[in-house]
Length: 288
Ligand code: SF4
Image (cartoon, rainbow, N blue to C red; front, side, top):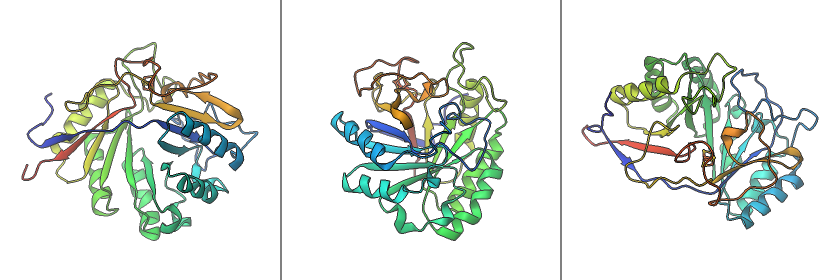
């Protein structure tokens, strides 16, 4: 299947040195496909603010630019407001990855200057965000995690709802697996895991049929490549957890591949010829 280039132009992307901080070891859901389930230390539910600021100061010294807050569910963290204030005071670009369930407990001002990404796993999940999104009026981007069970119609309906009802500007497509190598499966132990070829085919079909105007971000996952941004095979991601635990590559989180330290722009990719964490951005051509 050919990519429908007649409909889209590709936008250049910028790779920022990014620290993903898992501030919360608890969650209000129990998703079988959760990639962080093995790193959540139940003996310490929340990362202390002092511990957090220590990690971020070191990260800035290493040339860091962007912090992603994850968990568990980061909106549960009782000192989230203090963490966001600290990031603002340090001029850090911040994104929160959330399941969206608790968004309605906050107001728009709380997240001033912060990007919210709501992870969605199904059309049913998209619908369940509905009431919350309408109640709080907090803008967010939609992150759809494609699984073995996802259909193209489900993707189209989800995109339409995100655009028309939630006013999302971006629809981000991820897979729940990275490589079509039986020895390197990302989620071999979950029924949601689909083949990477299923992911590629579904994204192609979706791009062909999509008739909205959101920017579509597609995670490369080793099967998409940019035509405008040169490939980068150096790590620009790192992850830190309560208790000083560090894992450089997000793909190693599920297997708890801890290490002593991390660096940006020096370590060669351990999984692919270019970073699997990077993405391609497509925009609808006018009149296409
Ligand atoms: S996919 Fe490769 S380059 Fe990207 S963070 Fe992981 S090991 Fe590093």
